[in-house]
Image 1: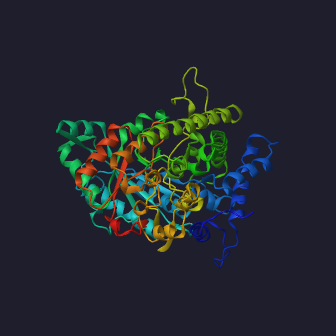
Image 2: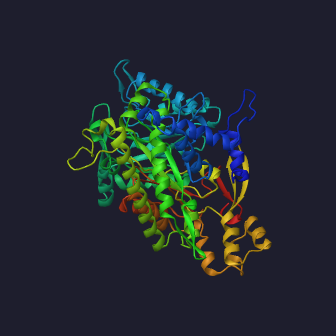
Image 3: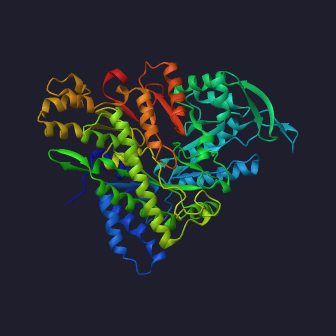
Length: 576
């Protein structure tokens, strides 16, 4: 029986994931790709048990992959069992305050992007512009200037021949150059290969609340060089985000409070989408469970299949732990950190699909409570499986001095086990909603790979229409042309409500969903707070403040139409 893949999924697989010969001709089927990945990742079992049933585990891995119940991050699908064998998605590289350190980071960036990975950097250690350069007596050009070199490097390196690299650039809010960093992407030609985020401190948030000033610190000397009014700086962040969707905000002190290995250093940066805080040279490999597949029929309706979900979580954790051992890392330092901390990030996709199956309205109080309970279940099973692996394979080597190094705490295999990623192309392959996002639209054009445009109609519309007895061809054609399901008389009100889309949901509800998942996620949660084009500056401001109050580790807003190019474009003219 063949795989149930959409035309969009096949397009993405053929262009980016399937093996090709020297002439660029695809020589691998999707089934063969999943078998290649399953076989390769199962090989890690032999490290710990020479008599391991490799074929049995390979078949189990193949089953969850080919049934689109679980997918690992893109580099694993692309590279497992092939020449590169670089399987991690994201890396953080240190950028020290010297030319040697800066250009070492640029060299390693090129290697990582060539292998299909993404990179995150904090530029907060770099001395500010116009500061003294001791070796020459000249003046420094500052972080933003050096970031342009990283951006140009990314432009020149095409990832593994399949995709252009992604970067996260971060600057602390107390860096003297913070204003130029906040405003740099007002020019749409600047930093096209970067997402930008401001690392906001608790001191800043306290000053913001009081309407007071906070200190600017020269990282070269550690001395206070001046003061800024927190509200004025915050207003600039909000204004820039309203105009262009950037910068995002990372609550860096909160992120560090959740650092499982504080003895190794503090977090300064994250991966390109902000959901994975990492130490210097630390990689992480991610994978996501398709929640839309974790349901079963129940007396004419649907309910969560918790047994299937538990089995998939356990297999997913084992899969990701195996990835660490069979991956080939871009540098020796990364190899050491990968195996010493053994961080993995199991997350979810298809949350909006699951809610439709359960006839639950995205953003309702019921859905927010359910999100928290669901993620707690996943977290508890994930940690239980990590403890099970530790009994056989040993705890992660850096456990001494970590938060797990306490009497009465059973050793764990991994420093972290859960992360919620955006799952952009993975959700196309799986044919599900991305990450924990609501539906963007029921009918949309998806931009993939060098301007290829794929029209997509949410398949759940037809499925629910058939289940509820109001299916007809006219309805499907109406929605496929961008019509609003709420305008159709044959659709019951209760069903109109469950097909809520991104712009129907208030910013507060978006953030409450994010916060619900964050409560039980070790790392962070990738979530875009989608705003309609007529959203105000104050809408953005309140979103940022609410995210801080509710315990999120970061927040990204995007007002539709504020960028020339966007990945999803709805067919309805209202928000296009």
